[in-house]
Amino acid sequence: MLLTYLLTYLLTYLLVQERDGYKSIIDSYESEITATVGGRTDAKLRQNLEEVIGALRRENSVLEADIEKAAGQASEYKTRIILVCHITLL
Image (cartoon, rainbow, N blue to C red; front, side, top):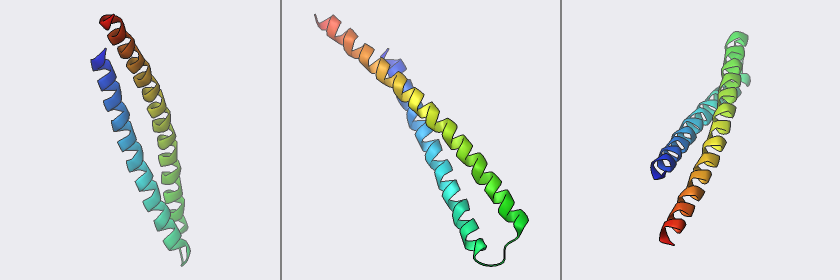
């Protein structure tokens, strides 16, 4: 059970890292769009960047849901471990 908890914790950590990476990419693209919107922009480039940002935001939403699910599972496993340890000590 401890191994399951540790694996769930590791999965949560990795999902958080991936989510943060996507957020960084989104910020980068938004900065690029903002920088080019002030001057003359290529409409096609802007549209492509907006599509990429939309796709990254959707992926980020999926990752957020996965993180919440993994965190819930980790909490459940932690509770089980505590109960098993408590029962063992009795």
